[in-house]
Amino acid sequence: MAKRNRKNNNLQIEKGSKKSQPQPQNNEKNEGKVFFSKRLIILCGAETEENYFKGLQNMESLKNNNVRVFCEVSKKSENEKFGEPINLITTFLKVLQNDETKNSKEWTELEQYTTQTNQNGKLLYVQNTVTKIEQELSKFKKQKTKILDKNSDFLWVVFDNDDNEGTKQKEFERLFALAKKYNINIAYSVRQFENWILLHFERMKRPFYVSECKNCLEGEEQKPKSCKECRCGLSDFSAVSCANGKDCKGEICIAGYLREKKYHPFYKKGQWKNESEKSSKASVRFCFEGLFEDSNFQKEKIVIDKMKNAIENAHWLRHQKNEFLAPAVTNPFVDVDKLVSEIIDYQVYHNEYQGLRFDILDKNSLHNGKLKLQIINNSKFDVLINQPNLSRFLLVKILPNYSRNIITAKNIQPWSIVLERNIPQEIAIDFGQDITLFSSFLYQFSPNQHILIDL
Image 1 (cartoon, one colour):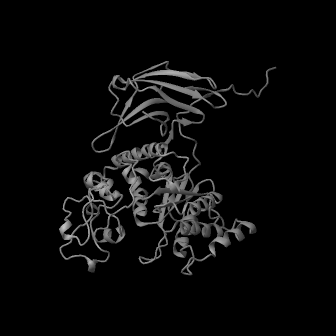
Image 2 (spheres, rainbow, N blue to C red):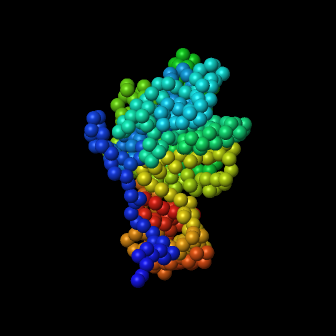
Image 3 (cartoon, one colour):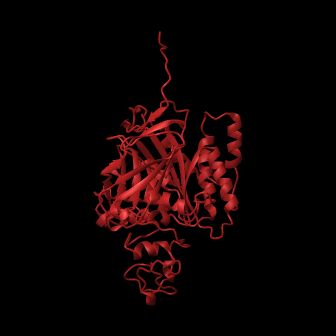
């Protein structure tokens, strides 16, 4: 009699469907039915980051993707800067400390962090922000005593590092270790969040050391009466009207580069919430709003395409700048893509995933539309790849409006491939056209998961 429990053979087959999702929870009192399997609690260090992620939070096209986004900025008032990285981390530690499921040892350990004070004698967390986060976490919960659900709630802090000389490296290493210990995720950029915005439009690895040149003296009363808009890269910039500046045209400041290249022609940092209340949405061109084409806020697909460009370009940048270097001493450095990938459900892995390594062997035939690829299987199993209707090789071409044109390979030899362990396999791919101007080469192994292969 054959054994009833046979072991599966060692051939793993790619799955084209998404991972199974938890059943939607039901909140009958407040919000009706809730359709999300993952909730991202995002705490930002500045208003630019907050503007971006709150814009994402409110996009109509993302409201059915099983992800709930809640974003706050850690700033008590306009005159107080609570956005320092340690303050962001400690705010979440205070939330964790208040979780009644913590044991006494964990509670004491957390208390050591949340009772520290800074040089001004102020607590390192903002109680108003803690309260808002706890109110959000208490929604959709059957048991009010448990604040965090480890299976669906994920904490993220977003900040940049303006340390020119890398003098804060040890401080940042300690900060990253503390965040890792308590499962707090970090989305980080050096030196400015604008490095992430630039990646929506192009691949750039040269460093910028300031976000704005700040040609005008601070304070409206100190500006010349004739001064209008003294931001680099604007077409009406007038050095004559400025007290102490000139247009760097994007050579020095990254915001000026965004404007000079017309990627984000009227890019503006600052108090976006105050100005948004005074102006119509279409007239405000802050970080998130400026990603829309011609202020048409119905064209969300183009914005999602730009974010996919940025995700792929961020992987490229880390690979170019040596992703094994400490982030604090790498300029530019961006890993904000890890958070945005979770929100828009678009995952990219650079050259390798689950033990499969992809490398191009011959780049001289790109103009003929042909590629030779080597794949090495370093996993524990033989793997079947490139199954019809499940996975495919793709090329991405960026259109003038930064949306994406996707080209699928016309001919692949051999078609379905069994990759034996540790044995290199070569395949030939024909796209049937000149591919030298394409930006990304991807292997799609599920609808929202891709391996990015350097061209």
